[in-house]
Length: 114
Length: 117
Image (tube, rainbow over all chains, first blue to last red; front, side):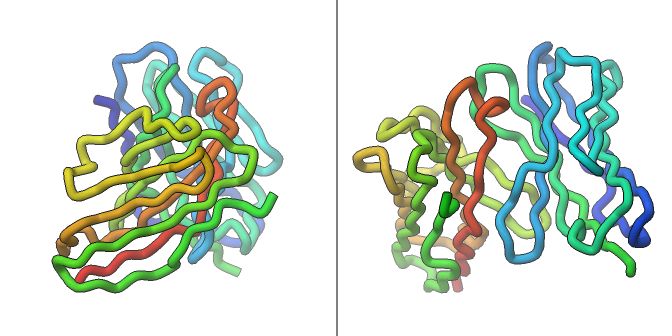
């Protein structure tokens, strides 16, 4: 079975600084996809960024980028120029190719310090 | 795009009672998913539908749980004889369903928070 581990329950960062959230996963599949979702307080979960495992190039979406290390099974999220609106729970998630079931980590609560 | 709508937002019930939650997906989305999120945990997959067909159910979904999606539109999740361990946030999500979860990302609702006393 696939597992996703987020070892940082909480992180904080000064506004305008850069922060990196860690995620590792375990799988025997060779083809899969990875995601970072953001869940603001009392609001719905939204997709931040996604990565295809067969692509070596790291995905980037504006201020959000990932460091995908397939051999190490690591998928970290870097948030640059942190803004107050980035405060949320961040979940790393995995899905195998052809599968519809997302496996989530336990989340990292990110606090932005003004 | 009015988003995924879930009702009620909160439900408090006594142990042993039955509860039903409703999810209205984004109108053109043909896939609908239910997840459960307990405190301090990430969401866990429960089940999903392609139109009106329920295609996969998690082992987490005991016999007390049943989900339906009549006519491929809204969906309901019913929990019979609720137990305190059922207390959780129940999340619904929908997607276009084209090209798998990667190409058709999930859009989540705000969830229904269930408290069983």
